[in-house]
Length: 177
View (tube, one colour):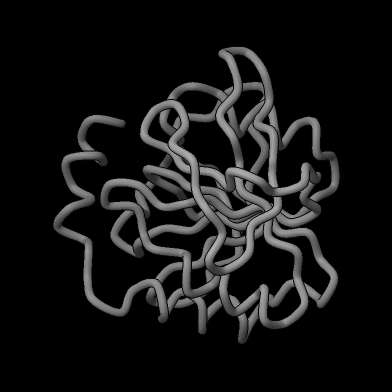
C-alpha cells in the first residue's frame, strides 16, 4: 500500500491546498494560543503545511519541527519561527538549525494514507508511532490530501488513531468502527 500511495500522491498536488487545509483546521479545531504544536517541513509531494504553521505562530502557538533521530528512537523537536534557518536531516527532512528543544502537546502528523477510523499509514520507520506513544494525551491531527483517504489502513497493536485529519477539503473526525 505504501508504494501505491507514494505513486498516487503527485497527482493530488494542487495549488492552494495548503492554504485550504489551514483554513479548515483553524475553523474547526484550532490549537489554543500557547499550544506547542509539532509540525514538519514538507518534503516531496506532501501537502504544504507551512501556511498553517505560519498562521499558528501568528496566533501565539509555539511551533516545533522534528529532527529525525537514530532508528528506534522517538523524534526530537526544535522550535521554529518564520524565517528560521533550516538544516538538512535524514531521509530528506529539514529542521530548525538553532531552535530550542521542546515537546509538543499537539501534533500535525504526515501520512501516506488514512481511513475513516482515524488510523494512518506512515512511511514505515515507526518514528511517529514511537513519538506519539511517548506523548500520551497530546492531540494527534493528520494532515494530507483528501485523495489519500482509503477504505482501511492496516492497524498494529501499538497504533494510535488520530483525533482528526485535516485536508484541503475540510476536517474529518474519525468514526469508531
